[in-house]
Amino acid sequence: MGKYYFPKTEYRLATIKLELLEASGIRGVILDLDNTIVSEDDRYLSPGAEAWIQQAKLAGFKFYILSNGKRRYRVRYWTYRLDIPAINPAKKPFPFAFWKALKVMKLKPKQVVVIGDSRHTDVLGAWLVGCPSIQVATLPHPFRWWEKLFGKRVQTPYPLEHELEDFDANSYQT
Image (cartoon, rainbow, N blue to C red):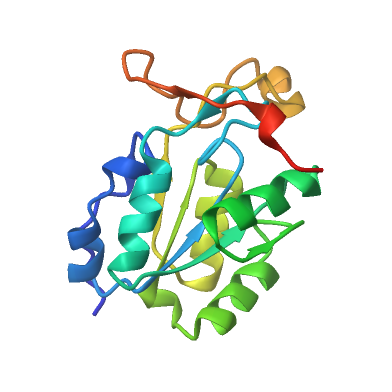
């Protein structure tokens, strides 16, 4: 173990090759929610994300969502829709939620990849617990306070030439 055959970055979840994760000994996935699966303003869904998750589950991968999102009903909705347990608020990058997800999945850090759009929460949190990570491009969303402070996006922006799926936020069951 220790050799990973997958890239450290991808532009979206559905472009990550499951066979490369398997070849690297990965058996579990910790996923971010906001701007990785669905934009935090609920405008966009990452194209192919749900089908990719289903395919990964059929291949035997275990999943957990860690979300720092403030709107808990969104996390509950996506937990139900994707049939993936979640921790919210996860307080990433602090390692507590990562450790809990690893314990529930009954996997070692080297067997779990963390996938998210943020270097300072997802990638850093993965590193702190010894998990490999893949940073995806952030889905389009309104600037956050720290992005306004720096005058730019902290994450890798989603490529404008690639397709996006619209998401109807009215589908939430509150």
